[in-house]
Amino acid sequence: MDNKTKELLIDKLATLAVRVGANVQKDQILVISSPLHASVLAKKIQKEAYLVGAKKVYIDWNDDELTRNYYTYAKDETLQEIEDFQLARMKYFVENNACRISIDSRNPHGMRGVDMGRVMLANRAIGPKTHFFQEHYGSSKSQWTIVAYPNDEWCKTVFPDLPLDEAWDKLFEAIMYTSRVSIDKDPAEEWKKHTKTLEDHSKIMNDYNFKKLHFKNQLGTDLEVELVENHIWAGGGENGGNGIYFVPNIPTEEVFTMPHRNGVNGKVFSTKPLNYQGNLIRDFYFVFKDGKVVDYNAKEGYEALKSLVELDEGSSRLGEVALISNNSPISNLNILFNDTLFDENASCHLALGNAYSMNVVGGTTMSIEELKKIGYNVSITHVDFMFGSADMQIVGTTHDGKEVVIFEKGNFVI
Image (cartoon, rainbow, N blue to C red; front, side):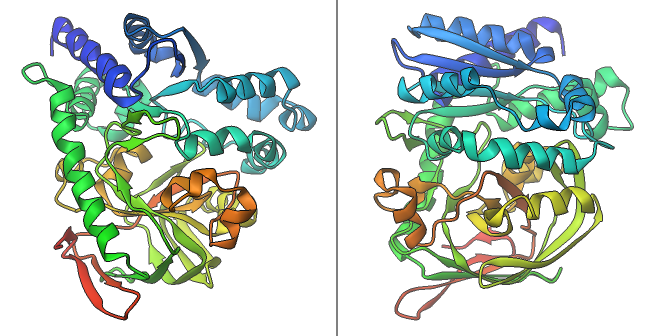
């Protein structure tokens, strides 16, 4: 791919992120989170945001090596500190309805060899103090979106047999394809059609108002997931708590809702690796009883998995259940991205950790205590893992006991 074509596609992705993804409004604050190596995209997003009338654009730069150095060499007490000015900054963004755009471009092995106990030490100390910020955006009280950009290490992980320049082009093309960005079509129009499809699936699921879902496949998954009463299935675009419509993930193929924190029972096997805190976890399973993980293991990345499950009380319970047909654009590429943004949209997934208050009627106006009474899970983390397969069967049970086949052979049949 020539440089002129690449630049045009990056321009289109930036426009999509601003005008459709976050749907930045006139006089609204935008916060961009970007790796240093993705500055070309970050700068284009900043420019586009000002063109649509953003009041001010802040950029939070990050870097895998800097993060690795921090967790490796900083003192324990430093890892557990977050300064008042950082909390004040977060509070300012929340109180002033700032929207966010994050650029996803991580090294899948960026934290390999780092003591996960130190990462957990930091998360346990800082997570409760910043939960208000994660809850605000996680529950879509203001707009947010994620887009992706390649990096060398990611490219080499996904396409290890190709020369780096070819691997980079191939990953770039896959990102653009799954993000519905192309030279000859208007991405905004493509997303308008796509979000309607996902919203139609959500409506079907909401009309059934299932009490529970039962997942089974030949790998050994046999899991019942009870849903909270008055749950809401969402997918595609959504209306934020501020009334502004936006598309949270680019790409996205999912419809998702809230499981009851105490209503999960059975065993579930992963079907794709999980990239958690810069560590790849492969071939793992969880056993749930009354909502809680009571047994787990992994062939690779056990310590990282342990640090996730044992992070806090809520990290051993589910906060999300999401359905994605096996016959989807991302799945059909047959590419293992080793990145949750993409792999979660190629497969049905569950999330350990915090639930989204938007997934229950009236949830965004409820207090945490009110939400907990209806089965909402609280945690300082939210981590998706993939368990969908080509032979997945999902049966839903309604409140009057009627059983309805939702998935057959990995795909929606309702």
